[in-house]
Amino acid sequence: MTKLRCAMIYAKDMARMTAFYRDGLGLRVVTDSPGWVELDAGGTLLGLHAIPAEIAKDIVVTSPPARREDKPIKLIFEVPDLNAAVAHLVARGAVMDEPNRWGSCDGLDPEGNVFQIAAAASP
Image (cartoon, rainbow, N blue to C red; front, side, top):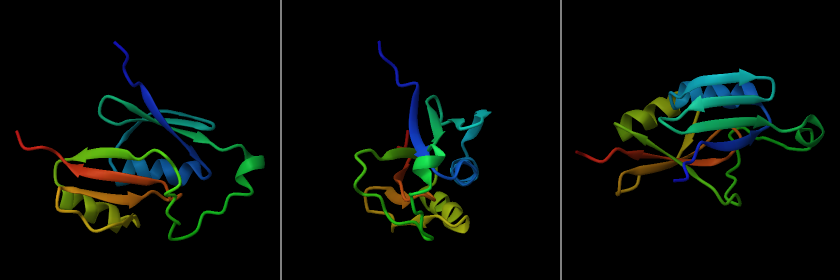
């Protein structure tokens, strides 16, 4: 059986992106080396890979970040309490959409990558 080991995001500002996924979403850092960070996302790893400096210099990250809707991937994280998770992320400067009626909410990480948090299904 094939198993997803790690999803990866290229990052211009590794420190800021690491802090967002660690502190905003509560993921635990398991590997932290120059240009590469892995965070435990509940059984799958989220990797952050530094964009090479010669490429990163031409990338503009705005504040608040511009939505990168042209990217074909969106990471979805399950949370026990959607409203609490939205409030926690907003308090840390995240850009979050309004929660939708089916129990999820899109947001932007510090570099504009779209992610989603979704309420855990009731047992």
